[in-house]
Image 1 (cartoon, rainbow, N blue to C red):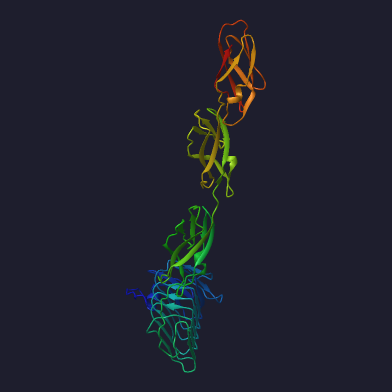
Image 2: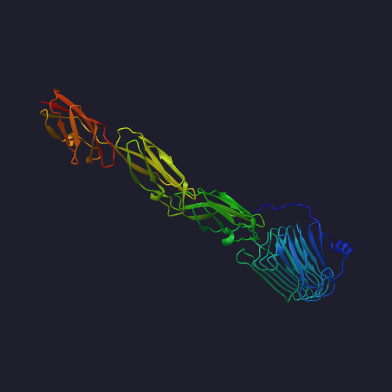
Length: 489
C-alpha cells in the first residue's frame, strides 16, 4: 500500500460558497484554487458530470430545465487540480457522475428531498464522501469507483436504497443507513467488501496495472509503431500513456516513446538478427507502476547483395574491362553502382573503378600467368555484399627458341623452326612466322605451315649464316625474336 499524503486542502463550506457565488441559475459551478465547487438551489436539480480529460469535466442538464451558471447548454470546466465538491439543496435532485477524476477529495451531499445519486468510474486521490440527510427516499449507487483513502457514505431516515458495486476504498471506510425499510448492498468480490452497515476489510490494494506482452514486425532497416497499451489495463484509476517508460533497450534497434503511449521501434538493419526485444512499464493515474512487459519484434531481414565470381583474360602488360555489376545480384533491393569497392588488390596489376559498375584491370607485364582480386557492392539500403573474386588469366606471348640447320652452298633447306617453340596457352599460329632479320648469305622464306625455307647463295665462301624470326599465338601475342644458325658446307 502506498503511503498516505498529508496536506492542507481548501474545502469551502456551503456558506462560503453561497456568499461568493454571484452567478444565477439552478446550479452554480466555480473553480476555486483548483477545486471544482458545485452548489445547487432548493429546486429539483438534475445534471451530470462527464470527464472529458484528466483535468476537465462537462456539466450538462439532464432534464432540459436545470440551468448551469444560468445557461441551458453544457458547461466545460478545465484545470481541475484539486477536489470536486457538490452541495445540493432540498429539492428532488438527480446527479450522475461518470469518469470524474479528483486529485484530492470527491464529495457530494444532498438535502431533504428524494435524491438519486449515480456515480460510475469516479476516482479520488484521497477521501470519497457521499451523503443525504432528511427523510427523503434516496437512491445512491457507486459503481466501479475508488479512493485511495476511506469512503464515508451516509443516508437519511427515509426508505433509502444504497449499493456499492465493484469499487475500491481504503481501511476505516464507513457506510451508515438510518432508514429501517431501505436496502443496503455492498458487493465486490475482487476486493472483498464485507456486507453490513459498516466495516470494510482489505479494500485498498493499489494494485499496479496489468500489462501484457506485445508482438510486432518490421522489415530490416525500417521502423514500426506499436500500440503496446492495447492489451494493458489499470486495476485502479486509468492508464496514463505519458508514463510509458522503456525498462530495457533493444539490441538491434532503437525505441522512442510517443506522447500517446505508443512506441516506435527502428531496426538498425542488422544482417543476421531476426528478432529483437525490449521491455517497458506504465503507471496508472494513481502512480502505481506496472511490472515490465516484453515487446518482441520479428524482423524480416533483407538479404545482402551477392557478388558473383568473375573470370577474365588479359594479354601480358595489357588492359581489360570487366563488368562486375552484371555478376552481382540483390534480391532485397537495388544495387548501388557507386558503392563498388576493391576489397583485395591484385598482385600483378592495378584496378581502376568505373562509374558504371565495371573496372579496368591493367597487367604489370611480368611473367605471371594469372592474377586475382576481390570486390564488394552495397545496395540502396547500405547492406554490403560478401566479397566476390575476379580470376584473371594473363596471356603470355609464345617463346621462340634458337634453331640450327645445315645446307650445301648453293642449295636450300626447309627448317621446322616451331618444333622447339612453346606457348603458355598452347596456341601457336603457324602462319604467323615472320622473318625479322634476313640472312646475309642467302634468303629465308616463311611458309604457311610454320616452316622456313633457307636458300644459300651460290659461290659464297661463308661457312655459317644466321637469321631471326618471330611467331604469334592465337591471341596475337608475338614472341621475342629467335635466331636460326645455318651451317654452310
